[in-house]
Image (cartoon, rainbow, N blue to C red; front, side, top):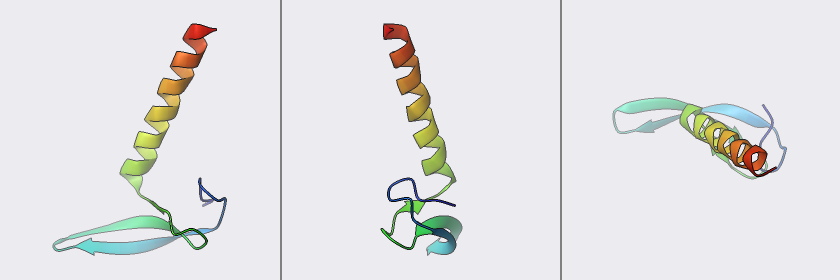
Length: 57
């Protein structure tokens, strides 16, 4: 996977928060973390921007 911030290489890392274990993608260059929720919210933001851009044109 390619990092959306710096285009660096990302790898899967397992994180824990007390009792919850979850997997995230972590960039080896900038340290950005991406999980399923972050990716879905990013896509929703891009879709909203496209809708606004097409309505004004």
